Amino acid sequence: MIRVVLSVMASVLVMACASAQVLPRHIRDKEIKPTYNEMVVKKYIDSINVVVDVDSVFRQTRQEETVLNNPYYYPLLLHPTLYNSPVKDVMKSTWKPSRLEVAAPLLPPATTQFGDSVEQSMLSTMMWAYTTVPWLVGTTQKDIDNAAGIRKEIIESPVKEVTHITPQREENIDLGIEDASYKVITRRPNFWKFNGRLYYSMGQNYFSSKGVQNNNTFRLETEFNINYNNSRGFSQTNNVKARLGFTSQSKDKKHKYITSDNRLEMTNQFGLKAIKHWEYTLTVSSWTPLYPKYASNSNYVTEDFLSPVTANFALGMKYSVDFKTKKRGNVFHFDATLSPLSYNTIYCDRKALRNSKGIPRKHHAYNSFGPSASINYSWNISKNISTRGNIYYYSDYHRVEARWSSTTNFTINKYLTSSLYLFPTFNDNRFVNGKRELFNIQETLSMGLTVTF
Image 1 (cartoon, rainbow, N blue to C red):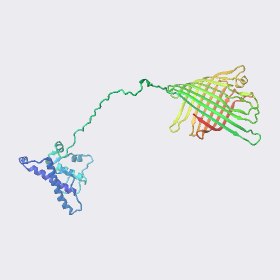
Image 2 (cartoon, rainbow, N blue to C red; image 1 turned 60 degrees about the vertical axis):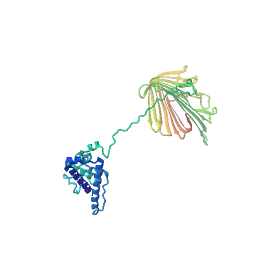
Image 3 (cartoon, rainbow, N blue to C red; image 1 turned 180 degrees about the vertical axis):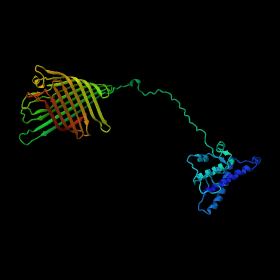
Image 4 (spheres, rainbow, N blue to C red; image 1 turned 90 degrees about the vertical axis):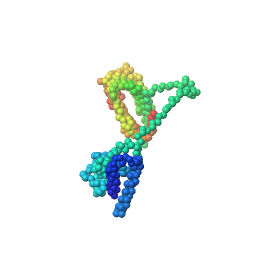
């Protein structure tokens, strides 16, 4: 139905154009020409009347209504004009002709290569006029755009708003405070970091059988770290550890408690950055007993404060590396200090203990030189389990001293912790009751209160 309507409109368009061409020029010039708007409205109304008549005939045979009420069909009713849209639609790459010969729009074709839509049918009709009767097309779309018509595009540039900002005058506002009261305070960054840990545990052992000693144990462990790093290559680490424990002995008639854990250790290290993970270091390590220790059922002192005291001065290089994760932070830390030459001294304040500590008679100290190595590590195995330790080695090519201290903490809550402490040592210059004692191991499993800061 739409094709028939468009065919009728095209026929009217062709006949109107032909009649306009047949009239003589002088007659057409003498006629009073209507305005452009009047011509468009008149031709469109006349065409609508014709379409309504044709449509009323088709209503008798088909049960559908087709009303051409779209005002954008006016190109079919005006003076033949070459529009851009039909030509662009035909010339685009996606168009594929299905028929080489296009039937006249007066005859309703069975199919059309442009599809069944009204818009495509209109474009097909206009292209038929352009290719069949091109001499009737005397106007282009550019001519219509340049002339005043029904539709006028807004081509004026938008008006730009100009905002003038008036500079404010500087005014002296009196706040009632003199300028002299303002002071600039410059604070230097704090390169020092301090942290510590306190651990206290106690236990009791009771046995009903004879021959087994009942005892009570108390142990206090402290650790302090004072570190300095100016982020310019210089660093300083200071570590102090103290362990003091007592155990009751029912068979010891002279002492109610004897020392079971007795050690004070201090490490100072100065570092200067070398390359990525390496730095030059000067390490000073020293350790000594903290409290007198007596032999069983005797007042004989086997060790005391500064009896002995060992100090090691090592100049070398340190390698350190950290492994971190986003969730748990610093998971594993490892550092190793290697010194090809170090100075080691052993001093004993009590004369009676000098020989048992490897110091020659009539001497207060024993001095030696040799290589040394120290390894520190810490590993956060899980949220509640962590371990840390130190491995130390020194030799003067005559004597060898090595030790390993390891502490594994099982955190129960913020303040309650279970701890496993291992301290195996090797020293070929240690004598007990006149006999050489090479190996010694200490193991302590306890549970107590922990405070960190």
